[in-house]
Length: 146
Image (cartoon, one colour):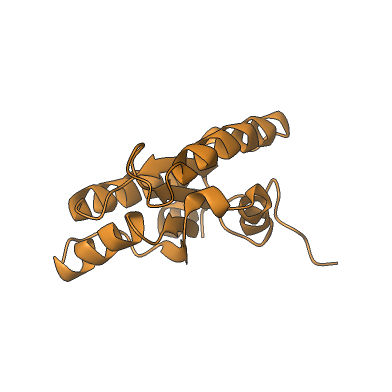
């Protein structure tokens, strides 16, 4: 099988770490509204994106995720006052570090999706999948078994 054909069949694995109050509710709305989006994403629900340890994202990449999406409440709408702003600062620092060690920028994405934005959630997932698929399989940080 040619490499080009194998790449067309390959589908990325994306870990989505999402806020319980907004993005997870948006994902639920997309599901009950039957809005189609790629099945490549595995959702991890957390109380607030501000509580995400940046090393969880690194660990997901090490364990074989081709991309990681972090999504929470829009600025000013956080159920924990400013958790999403804390998350944005952490994520910016982590993204800078990952860029420094050679991990492509589009492997990690940060977005805002509210509970009423089921269609936006589907669009975010489609966009994240397309960006990660264009990069190909992640090999930079994946732990190799000896």
